[in-house]
Length: 483
Image (cartoon, rainbow, N blue to C red; front, top):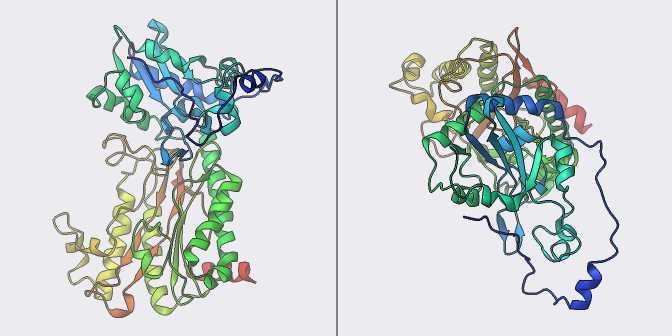
C-alpha cells in the first residue's frame, strides 16, 4: 500500500503552462532558508512528553497523524489545524502541517525514536511550487525543508512519500491514532480502530490531563486575550444594537480580536440574545439584539500555540439587569460559586457539578418552579431539575476547549482532581420560551457563567478573574466601557 502522491491541483480554469514558461519558472530563484536558531515554542518540553508516551507502549510502533485538509467548497479547503495530540508531541501548529505524520519507532531498550514524515518545501525544478493550489508555495506559502524541520523540532525527519513504504510488508506491533487521516488508516490496515488503537488515543488524552508551567502560561495568555475580546464586545454594543443581525456583529468583533492576537477562536463563538440563549450551542448568530434582553456570549481565543480559553458571560444589553433577570442570574452565580468552592486536589471531578446542581435545584424549588423537594429532584432515579439546566457544569481545558475527551472514565469523569489540571466551571439555566411549567416572566431566559480555573495546592486559581461576575460588577464594568 502506498500513500497518495502530491498531484498538481491546477483546476479546469487554469491557463496552460507552455514548455518555455515551465523552463523559465525553473530557473534563477534565490535560496530562502529559515533562521538556523528558530525553534518551536516550548521546544524543551517536547522530548519529555514523547518519552512519557514511549514508556506506555514499549516495543510498539506508534503513529500520530496531524490530519488532512478538508474541502470547504470546490477547490477551497477549510483552514487547517493539526490534531491536538500531534501538536502536544511536536510543537508544530501551522497550517503547513496538513498530511504530516509523527511515527515513534521502537528502538530497543532506548524506547522509541521519533520520526517526522512531512512534505518539505516545494523544489523549484518542478511545477508544484507554482501550479499546485493545495500545497504549492505560491498558493499557500512556504514550508520548511527536512533539515529545517528537524532543527525546529529536534526530531529526525523523512519525506512524506517514504511513509507508504514504511507501512508495507511485515510490521512490528503498531498502534494508530485512527480517524485522523484516512489514508494512514488504510495504509496501516485499519478498516476500523482496534482496541489497541483506542488505548493509544486514551493515553494521549490522559497524558495531557495535568498541565505543566509552560502550558498554564499559554492558557493564561488565551484567557487574557479573551478578556480583551469581551471588552471589545461591550464597547461595540451600541453599533450591534443598531444592526439587524446584531449577534453576527458581536461574533465578528470577538473573532477579530481572536484572529489578531492568536490563531483564531478556540471554537465557534456563541452570541445568543434573548431566547436564543436557551439553545446550548447557538452558533447561527443571526438574530437582532433587544436592549431589554440578555446576551449570552460564550467565546474563547486560541493562542498561536493552540491553547484554548473558554469563557461565558451573560450581559444585560441595556446595561442593567431587570429584577427577573437579576433573580435568575444570581441563582446561576451562586451555583457557580459553590462549584468553584468544591475545587481542590483530591476532590472528585464530579464534585463541583454536584455542588452547583444542589444550588440550582434548591433555587428552582424555592421559586416554585420545581414542584418536588430539591433532594428528591437531585436523586439519581429522578433528575427533574435537569429540565431547566440539562448539561454538565464544566470540562477540562487545554489544547482542545473540551480537552482530554478520550481519557478513560476512571482518569477523568470518575477521577480525582490534581494540581495542574485546568478546567471550566459553567452552570447555567435554560428556561425555554415555550415551557409551560414556568411562569411567563421566566420564559426565554438563558444564563450561563463560565470561568477557567487551574487546580493549585490550596484549591483553585481563577484564571479569568479579570472579567466581572457579580451583578453589581458586571453593570459597573459595562458602564465604564460604554462611557
